[in-house]
Length: 101
Image 1 (cartoon, rainbow, N blue to C red):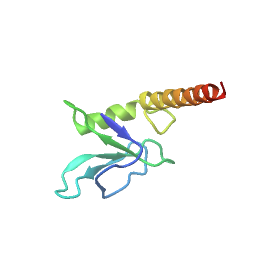
Image 2: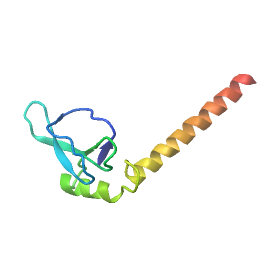
Image 3: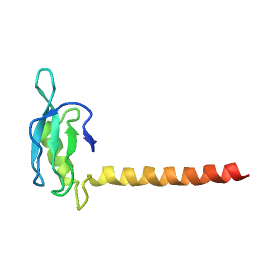
């Protein structure tokens, strides 16, 4: 399942505004459904969901929504983001220490 904070490709005909609401994301040429624009938090921008292998788009959306707590991102994605930010910060600190030696 793909979860993104910004749209890479596709057309949104409507933007969801209520938590749990979603609308299809369409291919710009033939207008077939390629994903969904999903509202996970009413005061935040929507997320963009694409289905995974052997799972429907509707089940992908349900699974993502079941992983959302008080934040905009699903918890596994949010925790991965926090970890990468921590690693980047630690690496920057290590790089600064190396340059001082």
